[in-house]
Image 1 (tube, rainbow, N blue to C red):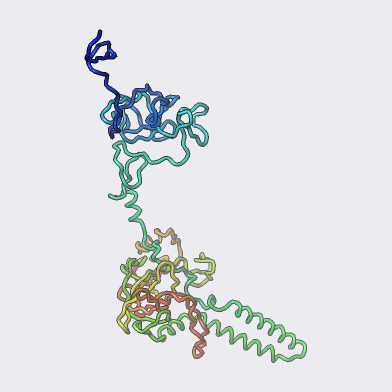
Image 2: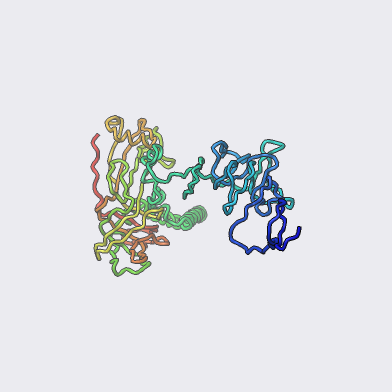
Length: 472
């Protein structure tokens, strides 16, 4: 049928007037295009399909979203465990740019894909459960699981995934440990053993001592040989006289050596801290004050001390037990010794400056502090001092039928003390530290005192308080 007006037929079979409209090229827009429904086939999904993988074995997988209320959470094993973040529900639709799309109803697993588009499985170590294991095992430590609320918190997590508490009241066990913690076990407190105190036999050089013994032995042999061969006793008499003189000098230094050193310390001139140079060996006298860790005496519980000493002696008769391996009969022997010192301050009498004396943290210290008798115990008054019995029980010491004597000494805050050490200035902080090498007193010829070596900081209490004997 002819007509002057052009017409064309639509795809539905209807004829309309006008020429067919030519297709025009569309300009690119920023809006997203709706993804076609692929039925879960990765090969038809393009780049978007690489984000969603359908596992072939139906095992548990890594989700993106909060944990579904119907899916249990397992945190104790690698087998079948998952980590979750974001939001995902198998019954919801995914939209992009307002166009509806569909997500597969199966659980998806994110991760790398092989050349065929299938998820790659990595395993390390033996598989749990024997032969066929459906879950994927990864190597490396298990990352901490976030709380089920999805809230990201700072700080370490506990085994349940919740933030660990770092503040708050201590439990009963912790508070008991803190209460039972003793100050003397602090690293800032120096424990001085019996070996650290001065002894003439220990300070005298062993090489010189054995050389003298060897010379006298040779002199006795030669004197005896000459006496037997020539009948001349002169050499033997000379050797005997020299041996007697040397023995007297050694005995004198052993008995009187400590008192001579105390006198030497008292006569040593005091230095002024204001003019003392860095690294100079000085003696400073002044009033002491406690540092960060004040001490307490062991038996009498005297507070705020910078130095404490408590010693227990036992008298050994003919058939009594020995207090130590070197304890001789009919003498007093040391059974136990508790001696502690910590850092303290001293105010110089000469200049008024205040210096920190570094005697704590295991520093070498040579103390000269007098001890006083606190308790005398024998068979007649053994049950009349409950404090002493309690003190022994705390240290697991038995009294039995022994004759004991307890001595105690201390340097309390406010006492006058003489300190010998090396001056050290560090950022306007004045300190007295132990010398790097022992200090020699030299020979005191007028008193027949041989040289003695003093190691570390020398501590001498000028006005040590006299402790009264506790009546029993």
